Image (cartoon, rainbow, N blue to C red; front, side):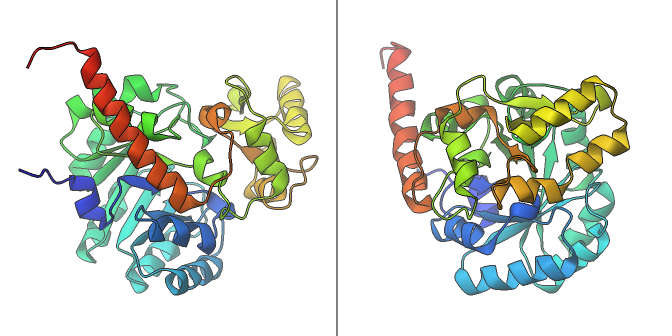
Length: 322
């Protein structure tokens, strides 16, 4: 009897992979490429205005007829309420809520037939999201790029604890970039994975060549954590700009100074414009694994094959007579 993956069934996708919300560097070309390949493309609203996000939604609709989603970082955006109305207006089925308390918004989204995914960095957050009516929990480990949980729990430790605590389908995020990572996520109890850094390193990402080169040059210990001194942590790749931010932190930055220095405007300067003296680039710990810039479709198909091979190999390691 064929088993159904509850995650792919809910999201209306073929492969259990979703693109992470990437804030102001989101673009229609990448989101559509991910969706057209059978996974779930995602538009990250970041600090963009509703008009800017609407333009990307409309362009994505022109580029794909497959399901895609919108991520709203609740405490980051000044327009969260308007953005929620926007996704309802355009009948966006899949909505991801992060960086804030999703509970006040879930009921309304469900009434409009949206599938609600919430990003959690702790078990307590996931339990609250389940009680509030979320459909899916994205469990994000400390390995992930960008804004990070203060809990510092790794994906390997976090996902099995989520599986014990909640009944919802779980997406594993943080430190995943290939089929071996997907296979590991399944073994830990997840139904699928979310990837950010790996999708940045694709031909359709639209990111500057300087960003892509920085990912390809990464090693296992290349990423840095900014914001430790102000409890606003962000995982990034080293650039001249972020190194100056870290030096300023050591001298005693205020929270407002740090937030200004790591604003989405500086993210765009680094990621899209390639101005590494004036901007930063997010990067997860998986960056050290990435050594090529494939087409999105090739990446996803390779992942599926590699995951199957990895799972079959894992079974052979058990050395159980059947």
